[in-house]
Image 1: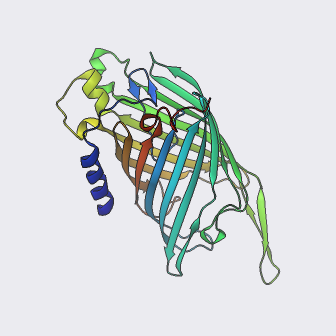
Image 2: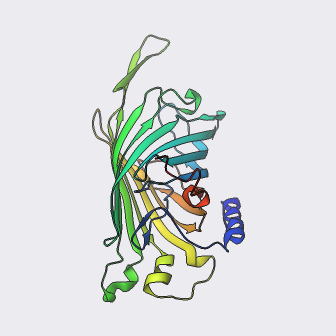
Image 3: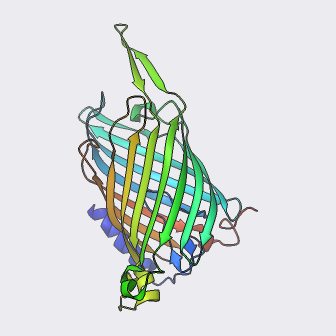
Length: 310
């Protein structure tokens, strides 16, 4: 945790001179940052490299309790101004009393179409499909040998049109997603060395992500200049909520995490740091930390890799 904070502050010091001139994630005056635990409601050219996380996991089934460290890369590319593709890969390290295992989790690909951007109401919405590619990761770290397809709706709404009596609430914004993960295989049957068969069910899973944000840049520029200097005038405090619930084939209760933290958004990069806190005992495990370095490719190279293909 201390090393992540030092890295964050050091990078802020190196980039604090940049001027914000965003070309992505805007609806009217509202800038929606790229959130760390939930997907964005817009289409853009961006690169997250790296996203780092650490958390203690509880024992589950035959898997012992473990310390999980993850390093991820996520790349999104606009094909047109409103349609984009994404690719993601995560390398995991699981350290338990039985030893340490490492390997890549299943690869992920996705497509997203942004069908709404209303400047007056600071609203934005997209529809997307994610594909967790079965059998593309290492089984030793628990990668599934079946795929999961997740169609989802993504949305963002700013509150900049509130009246003068609530003007200090105008920097608030809400983003989120709702989707259903559909496995390509409904169950898996295994037979132990004694010939006993066991069946593991793979239910459809409802995935819900929410993020509530308070934009200090919006406060400074469009509500009242309260005199914040660098780097605080580019900070967006937020709380994310990432939840899931099995819907069938045995079902189950809600599990997930709540992630309080903040992002710092410059012209070319964004830095984010969040705590990862289980929402209930069913989720298991302990508190963790999540850090991300995010590049705005559409600002870095607007006439090159950051430009839509068509």
